[in-house]
Amino acid sequence: MALSFINIFYLLLLITPLDLSLAKTCIFSDKYQVHVINKLPSNSPQLKIHCASKNDDFGDHYPIVNEDFNWSFCHDVFGQTLYFCHFWWDSKDKVFDVFNNRYYCVDNPDSPNLTNICKWEVRLDGFYLQQYNDTDKTYYMYHYLDW
Image 1 (cartoon, rainbow, N blue to C red):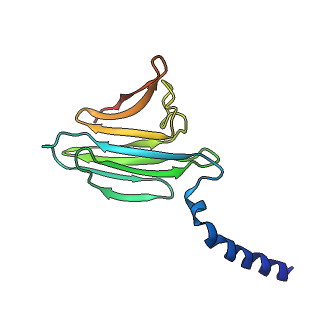
Image 2: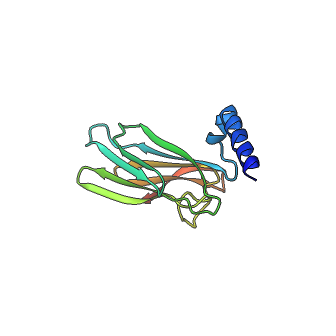
Image 3: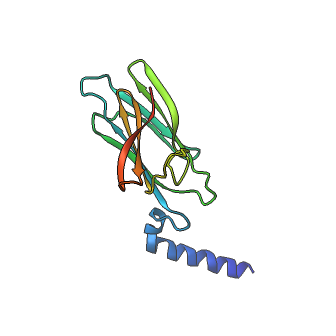
């Protein structure tokens, strides 16, 4: 028994370096992306973003106008993946989930996103989430939340 365990251990040590690209591939689930784009006016105060999940903390980010802060991840097989962000802009701040549902990006019964990309825009009047218009088969930015 101990001999076979040692053989398996050495075999794994030999195989692992051969294909490190597996670490970047989602084997049992789909790969998702979250994009947060600063669409505030160029002459406005600096936007600050801090995004995290139970397992990941991306720290503070200060995207300039039109900059895209983004990350990708493998969706939890059991459907428990959740990312949230805290936003600060001038005297305003807001915290909310930016991903908690693989079909809608966030729980929203209006329409499915139909993509593995959750695109957010931070604007003067709030936060916009890209949605799919089933009627004309196009994407549009939906005003999801006010500041």
